[in-house]
Amino acid sequence: MPEVKELVEDENKIDTVIADDIEFRGTLKFKNSLKIKGKFEGKIISNGHLIIGRESLTSADIDASIVTVSGQVNGKIKASKKIEFHKKSVINADLISPEIDMESGSKFNGTCIMESE
Image 1 (cartoon, one colour):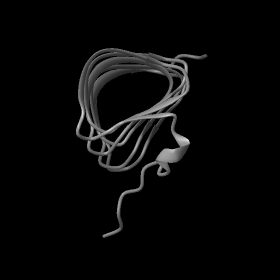
Image 2 (tube, one colour):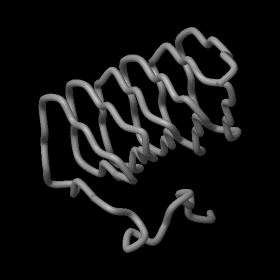
Image 3 (cartoon, helix red, strand yellow):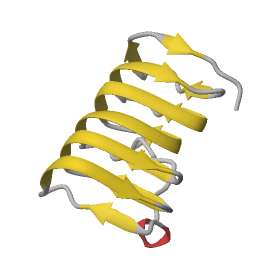
């Protein structure tokens, strides 16, 4: 069986990575790109690219430019540009974005509003 590939495989191209052994709670703000591999609970605000890693469990209200999910997200996701769901991702969230890409094999439960930029 081929391994599931994440959109951004080279973590050297990502400004910040929250490792898989980290559990974080609170409000997270960043400007460029961030990948969460561990657990996060709270609120995320950004004009950049948020990447939820394959092993990540994120429970948050998210407001970012681009949101890419390979793991699990619970909460709300608002993206000014695009939301992407990769194979085997699990999303229990309400979505607001002008563009949403879902790979076959991703699971989505919630509402979806397609707004223009």
